Image (cartoon, rainbow, N blue to C red; front, side):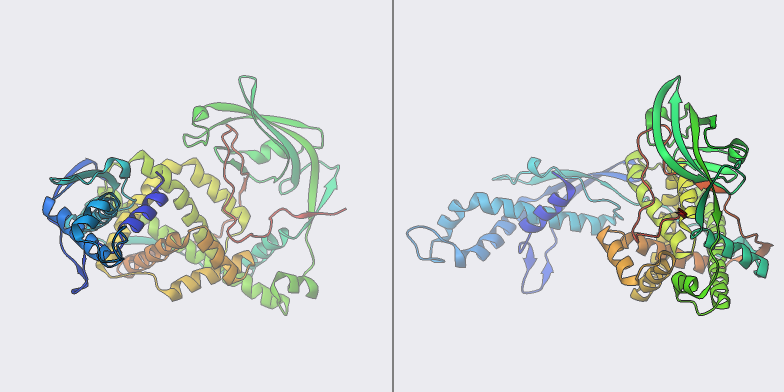
Amino acid sequence: MPEDQEDETLEELGAGVGVDEAEGERTSLDLIVNIESPSDCERHVTVTVSQADIDRYFDDAFSEMMPSANVPGFRIGRAPRKIVESRFRKEVAEQVKGSLLMDCLEQVSEEKKFAAISEPEIDLEAVEVPDTGPMTFEFDIEVRPDFSIPEWKGLQVTRPVRDFTEEDVDNQVEQKLARYAQLVPTKEAATSGDYLTVHITSSEEGKKVEEDEERVLRIRPRLSFADGEIADAEKLFVGVVAGDRRTVDVTLTAGAPNQEMAGKTVSVEFEVLEVKKFKLPELDKDFLDELGDFQSEEEFRDAVRKNLERQLDYEQQQKAREQITKLLVESAKWELPPGLLKRQSAREMERAIMELRRSGFSETEIRARENQLRQNSDASTATALKEHFILERIAEEETIDAEEGDYEKEVFLMAMQSGESPRRVRAQLEKRGLMDVLRNQIVERKVIELVQSEAKFKDEPYEPGQNQTEAIQLALGGGGANAIPEAFDPEDDDSDEEE
């Protein structure tokens, strides 16, 4: 039975049983609980419920049923209790089973102090309420590992700092305008920064593995795929004209979507269909309105400068987080179950992308970072999970949590980057079930800020990065690769072609 159906069934069966209505509190169950630990994050739990508790739940259920029991030959609610118990025993047994399971799980979690990170896996059909004697059931559950919080006060942290110059703003303005540039076909040989329309084919030992027709890419120093990278892409493409073909070998990463191809080398051929150069738009009044209702070029440049400062803040956060969590997880030698890593990898990708969006990075830069994360998904997910467990524990001890104002700020920043309304951004997050991911992001950032407030800093110069990577959401080894989650329907980064 699927987990969501399990939860729904338990809720339906568990209604109204096991609670002392006079006190408004649940009476504790007399349980025998045996816990096995197959790994640091896994528990196998066997629970035995006493006959006395089972009888009490049946008594509560029948007491609730008596006023409305409909038995032929008797007026509603007037049938003798023994007849009602005999006639409705089977139906009530299902209700009692659901109630006992729900209450047992809650009590076990409280008494054994589980920090569960998944729903318990219970085979409902295998659980039976016996006519006599105790009831026994078992389940598997993933939990946060037990550990001592490492010392986090007074850490030594290096921090990037920079006062942005007009030249920095000029470079950023050019990058932003490039999104709106017109692509103009040319017969000239391609140079760095030009765009190519290419037909991509990957093969292994002469057998075609994957194909992508009419892909538009920009010539940058590196070309990144979901499962590999061409480190010297400029050397490969500079000088090509329409009709040229270029071939290069790419070794696929261990985290390739098609695990049968992981670690193998494929031959990738690029057939150049067209070379295009781009023409930047002019910052006239109409275009400034289109960019965001800016009243002047200076106002637009101020917004660009603020965006650079947001990106610096992100780099400071990431640099601090990287150093802090490295120190914190040095003693975290826990084994994480492969199934947990696989499920969490997609959530970690979502969290990382949301963090980049709220920090003002373009979709092109996000795609490049996404491919980098995807290529090292197992290792990065394991590290991120260990970081999360430790930061969550610190948050609990320091009573740190996300508040409504925090959510509003995050949604507003993501809306600024995507050009959508905050209301729509939030609706998309809620629809895709990402509010818990957003909550984790907020809490973890607050904890990092707390650790930073207690840290000792050494400043170092920060160089705003030029985007050196062109990213393609294509797995050369096949198996598919999810594109960046379009929670906010961002404007396409590919520029319009001039007719």
